[in-house]
Length: 309
Image (cartoon, rainbow, N blue to C red):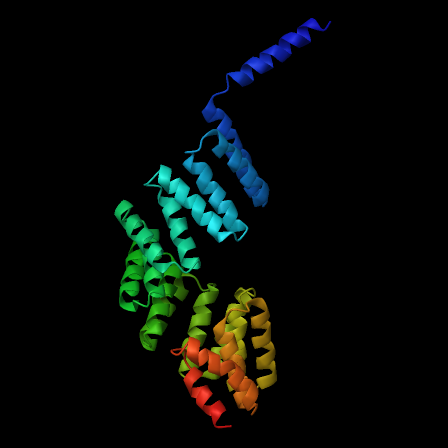
């Protein structure tokens, strides 16, 4: 009675032993992908590592492992995995793109620019090549070149409203408000539910001292996406200038709780203390900001007002 079972067992062992390396590592890759779909990146990383243990040059496993690290906000690990993927597959477009974005988030702007240049050489017909270039040049404060890059990306993906918002943002930085609003109007025709579009419009309206309409625009942005700290910070600022200071402060504090590293929120809190006549508190915020962010709008103006209290 036991003899047939032994035959089945031996057959299974023989089948496993004949399994190819590609099959084995491919199964680990698929298992990792399944865990990513289940929103379990930690377990996915283990499966990807098993695949890499079988083939230390397995670029796809390194790339997918990098994406899992991104899901866990492990930026350095992600960049390392993308670099490994590129090491074994130098023309790995998506790995270069994701590494470039990682470098941007990590403050390594010149490395991000190098990856953008590599992407353009690999595929000058892909909008993402110029999108990454635009982002890196924006970080490097080369606004004219950044605008050209975003325009190039838009020509390749004319239905992508985000790329138009990027252009409008650069125009805003250059204080070309009329041009920026015109681009935003075109972007809104493509996608009226893009929250960053309405937030940017609110910023332009604020600079034009149209505080009521600025408030209306940022409230549209919050309705469309209530997870962005800087939307609440902007709304708080506009309320300060509409003489609704306490509600404004509450929103600025909410923004700081969501993102403690945003210097604009700290500036706005300093502005609140100037408006309420608290010289000591105002100086505690604005003095350091003037040293660390001397070009930030309103900082020098309100530091001077704080000193005069």
